[in-house]
Structures are given as structure tokens and as C-alpha cells.
Image (cartoon, rainbow, N blue to C red; front, side, top):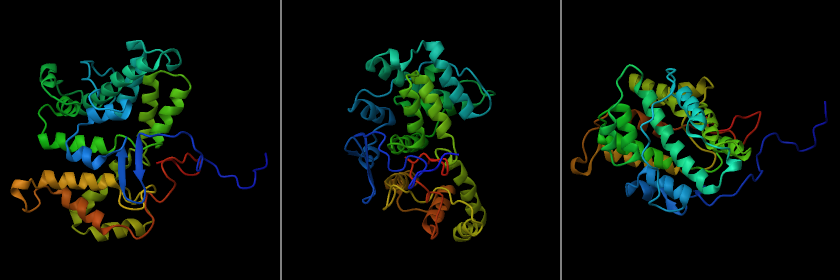
Length: 318
């Protein structure tokens, strides 16, 4: 077995893989900006996810995501992640995507937009399920944003507040530097593979419970708070058992995570419109979330490990 050099640390902590001007996390101040624009301004001014995509990719508004083509999901496994990951990979032969090594930047950008919005369509189609009829395309075409089309394709007649909530969530989560799924996509793209293969691989990384799959593990905690009415006891029980307290803390931000602040404000505004403020909570799940969040951990939580840019065999990336 070869000798391990002194000071060897597995993974990529401290290694500069690339530089970016797209996302600017303010670690001490608790802010996040996309190309200089604060996410709080984007959400408060109702800038849609489709337009934010254009800001991230092109550096300007007005060139955002196009509508998804009326293309059916090619596989229905009953698992959204599997459906989307497989469906994206199949786009390359269906649409004739050539390896990135063989195309120019403009072509790659157009293919990225086309495949990215198709990923949203696939998520909506898979989540709707195979036992419900597809929403007519003419109904989807009446929607004026990418997010509204996604929600309509999924639910048929979505609550406008739900559309706004999803839009705000997507905007706050649109970019965060070298997270695990971004790293995965960049590694695949660096081999010269096609755009669809890169996105498909990113979906696989995103699905992990220590990355994009983390919110799914928050729900049981919220449900337990709703059931018992005692957020402090629920949080204490999780920590006493030595389990991970999902959804609390972040290694990047020393102050408050700005994304949480923006989403909390959005939820409060949607639950309590200005015309009816103040009034009792009208949605049962929101106060449970607030109770758990305000209880807060006093011990290390699920985010006390390495930052999202760390790729280590000892500590899975977040």
C-alpha cells in the first residue's frame, strides 16, 4: 500500500476548481447575489425563474427559458427522479445532441435552454402520474411564465399562490456556486459529453439526501411537530438520538441563510396578504415549520459537515 503523504486530506477542500462571477454568497452578511443582483430584490420584484435563468446564463434579462415543447415523458417508472434522469439522457439521440466537444458555445447554450425547460416538463409529467390524463397543451400555452406552465402541466389548475411560492423557491435555489450537482455536471461536460448527459448526471447527484434530497427528510419532522404540537421536544428528541437535524444551518453562511429569509418572507406574505394582516395562521403546516425553525439546534446539525464544494470519500458532498 503506498505511503500517504504528510498532511494529506482526501477530497477537494481548499482546492480552487474554478472561479465564477455568477453567484456571490456573502458569508458574513447573510446575502446571496446573482451577477450583482440580490435574490431578495429578485423575489420581491417578482422576477420569474425563467428570467433569472437568462440572468445566470446570459448575464442579462430578456433571454430566459423558452416554453417547453409538447414532448411526452418517454418513461414512467413511478419515481420522479428516475423518470427525469432517464428522460434527459434520452434527449441526445432524440434531438440529435452532439458532444460538447464538437459544437460551439451558442449551440451549447441553445441546447441547454431546450433541455433545461424540458427537465421541468418531465418533472411535472412524472409527478402528475400515469393514471391522470395529461393537461391539454392549449391550457398550458395560456400560461405566461415557465413556472406557471410547470404547475399547470402538473396540477391542471394550480392555486396562483402555489405558483408564486414555487417561483420564489426556484429563484432562491437557482445558483449556489460549486455545489455537488453543479460539480457533477461540470465534470461530465469537461469530458466533452453532450448537454443532456451532463444534466442527467446532475439530477442523480441532486437526488441525494445530503444535497437536493434533504427537504424530503424535513417533512417527517414537520409532521411530527404538527402531531405533537411541541417543536422543542421533537428537536430535542432528534438530537438526543444522535440523528441528523435536516434543514438547519449552513457551512457557507455565518449569518442567516439568505434563501431561508427570502422564503420565510414569501410564505408570510402569501399566508397573510397585506389587505388582511394580521389574522390567525390560515395554513397548518407553516406554523409548524416556524416552530421548529425558531426552536433551533444548540448542537451540530446536518449542515455541520464540510461545505458543498467539498468532494471527499469520507464526507459526502452537500
